[in-house]
Image (cartoon, rainbow, N blue to C red; front, side, top):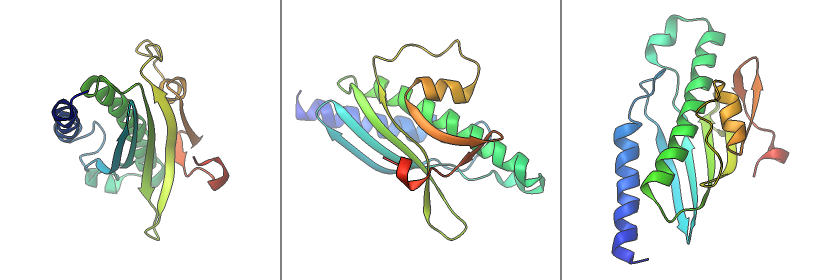
Length: 154
């Protein structure tokens, strides 16, 4: 693959991510890319999940956390789709989504290796099931994403 074409595709991915994923459905907080690495036909991407929307400040904590969790699952599925559409040479990608704890530490929420070859999940209504079928791992407690234990983290 020509270097110029590869650089153009990476720039398209970064630009598309900033434009298409600028706002979420449940949070207007930004989705922040922490790291992107491309080795041959394999990509690695780390993201900081969106925080709760400022409009959720008056909601009960569990409702706000549920919205944040749904948004993170929507975002990881959208990132996968965008990555494979913007970078046609990429066959698989390692995706990791983090959130910042109250102590300022990064907590791993979602991780996994996704493949271009995985079948369509458009007909599945459950966000969690879509993400699982795409090859992503995470812990849900009452619909709320919990940090993954260190021994299960990639």
